[in-house]
Amino acid sequence: MKALSIVRPAGTQIANGLKTLEIRRWQPDVRTGEEILLVENENFLTADVQEENGIAVAIITLGEIREFRQEDIFQACASYYEDGWLAWEIKTIKKIDNPFSVRAARKLYEIDDTVIHSACLIKIM
Image (cartoon, rainbow, N blue to C red; front, side):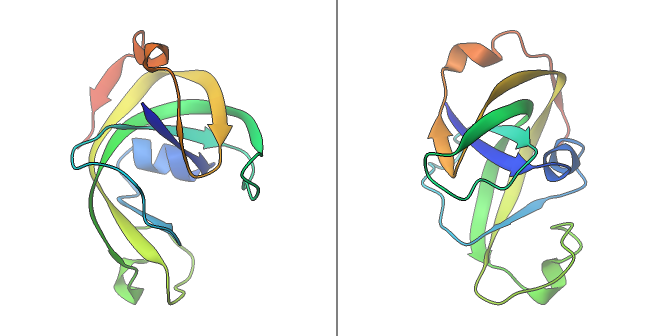
């Protein structure tokens, strides 16, 4: 399964359905409907080899990937707008009711699917 790390509190905001757009500079390599484990961590990971411990907070799927717009600030829980970024629409959210520790790495990365077998999921959207 693919995983995506996101700095706290944005992972919790997504898991609770408050943040429905993720803003990034790069295009994700995911198939339509592919589930992604959302891992909340404490620090921005800036190097490809950088990792830290994180907490699995949700399983999401993405919808449309498009240009970030000024009017997206509220849905993205962003504090400002900057041209040239992409808005990733979060299509579905399954909150993990029993968050657990898992590796956080940069960009999209692979984790063993078995880590989510004991997760209690609550469909948020």
